[in-house]
Image (tube, rainbow, N blue to C red; front, side):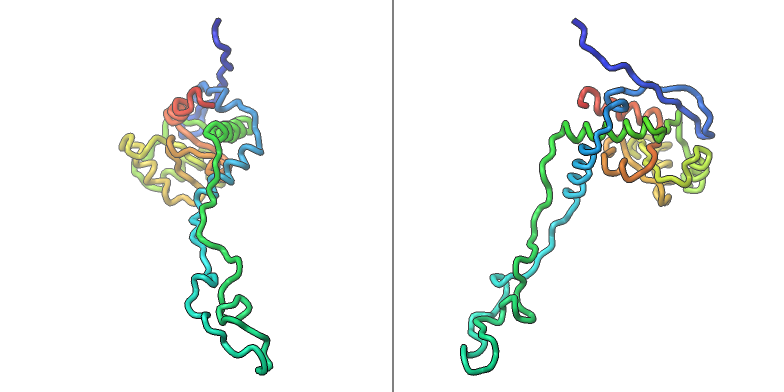
Length: 223
């Protein structure tokens, strides 16, 4: 008996002038999944928690020097009684219940993370926020040239996540990476580096057909 397979989706492909030149097949498991906001929220929290350094620290009574001698006698001074000058009640004393170094990381299964990625990509597809180009080249490697391409695609004023093969894939790709580094509204992502948080914080996903095919290959059968 043949296994059931979800039919592929289609996405228009344009050139660098913004003119339609064809269509590309998209994996429905990756671009036609249910948009589950709770999953996406959980994965964003997971990613941000992993990025936290957790190096915050304060001195508690154990970590402070001194404090072993009673600062003054118990009675007759007119002051409130005190047993140590490291008390949290004193100016310059220790901190009570202050933060200490810790890891904020928590566990989230690989399956949940990939389902959340599929949810974000599906949302971009459903809301026409996914743009595929047949080829993206910046012969000069200049930021201005790439900015002109984005203008022709109608993306100059939007926050864009540009998905590309790794910079070392070819000289042509390396020039695009170089040209895009100085654009404040553009975030460059390699196929291997595509993640939920960076897709969520950008309004549009822009990719070449080569990169989108590699992305689908990366997650083939895992979503």
